[in-house]
Structure formats: C-alpha cells, structure tokens
Image (cartoon, rainbow, N blue to C red; front, side, top):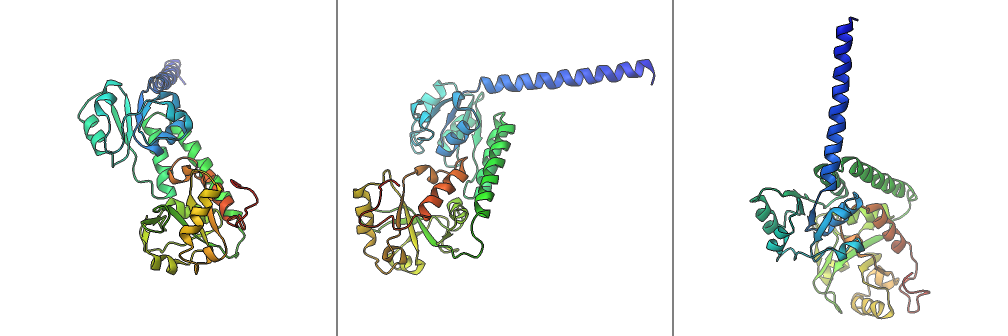
Length: 304
C-alpha cells in the first residue's frame, strides 16, 4: 500500500473516531440538560426506570410511583392541565399519552419543547415497545433495550415455571366497583396486559375473549364467568376491607370463588399501571393466586 493511501485511511479512521466521540458527548450533554414534565403515570415510571428521574421537573396529579415522583411539582391532571405553569417551567420535553389532547396541542404549537406521545399500552408487547420508543426519543436507547430484555426474560422464566398440564384457576381481576355492592363493576379483559400477567402467574383470565379490554359485568354476567379466584385492588389488607369484600360478593354465593373463600386482595396498585416492571407485577399476582384460604373469617395474618 502506498504511503499516501495509508495516510488517507489513517486520518479517515481518526476523523470517524472523533465524530463518534463528539456525537457521544453531545448526546450525553443533551441527556444531562433534559427538563422533562410527565403527564402520564406510566410515563413517569418509565422515565425513572430509564435513569431520568433527576431530569423530571414535574408530573401530573395522578403520578404516584415511584414514591420520589410525589415530591415533584404537580401540573394538573388529564382534564385540567396547568398549561401556563408548565410553559413557565421551561421543559425541554413533555411526555404524554394520546388522551392528553390539551397538552399535546399546546406544546406542538410552540418551539423548543419536544413532545413525546406514548402510544397504546394495552398489551405487554405494546408496553415494551413504548419503553423502547421513549428511550430512543430521550437518548436512553441502550438502557431501554436492557430494561425491556430483562423484563421479557423474567416473564418468560416465570411462565416456564408453571407446571405443564396443571389446571389453571379462572381469575377475575376487578379493576373497580361501587363500594358495598357489585354495581359498576369493571374487570381486566382478555386483551389486556393484566390478562397476560395472570397467565404468567399461573392462572387464566375469567373474562370472555369477546368482552372487550375493560368490560363491565352485571350479576348475570358474573355468574356466567364462574371465576375460581376474584382479585381486587385495595390500599391495605385490613379486617374492615375484607369484611366489605365478603359482604359485596355474598350476593353471588353460587360463584366458585365465593363458595371456596377465594376473594383476594392485592395491595400493590402499581399493577394497574402499564409500566416497566411487568415481571414484578406478575410475581405479585402469583403470590395472590397461590394463596389458600386467605379469605377465611380469621386469616392467619393480614397483609400476607
């Protein structure tokens, strides 16, 4: 090889290395100076999981997890966002869901603020894709990929641990209902990530395959589902909470879950947020589904 040609190749390589180094520094600097406002509870969880918690300068009133997020300034809610206060905070990025119409339209009309819209998070695959897209948008591509891969592997390992051929309990996951009754009862449908978590935890979702994502059921509809386990969300597993649970479901004594005292409480509300730690949420469900006699009149230990 001629000396001139070798010299050209050498300096080209040096230039390439310098360009990559400068690009890395620029990306790091951009990430360091991010000022993010999150308008979505799942977006807030994802930002913290991606290592961007220190760059979050504000959240919505609904963002409760992780606990550190509760100390951030609050900028209203889905229906009444405090747009002027958000603008005054000079965010470099705003994270929102498609339902945050006011926030999206407000900041898209102004320059200087990146608007990151989190797409649908109904299924596990969609949640993982959203985490990756958020990481890509905010300079955390590698962290997002590692987070998704670890969560996917943990879920697969959990699902593989389920005994093959073993009969799975039919689980009805109640998202909400009127206190003291079964009116306005909503459940997790078969097309949701919660249904997938139930499968990974060793159960099968009792909701019908054609009932929609978050169906509401009448008494007759609940009888048709015949759940073997009913799971409800509560702030605390207390005697009072369990008594209310039993009173409400005593109206349907023919249900296997009621007959066999399989009315279960899950006190980790993070399961209701399609966030970055789905394997953790599946593990919480596994603990609830695996309990036996937890709804007896004198449970061995409340909050078990």
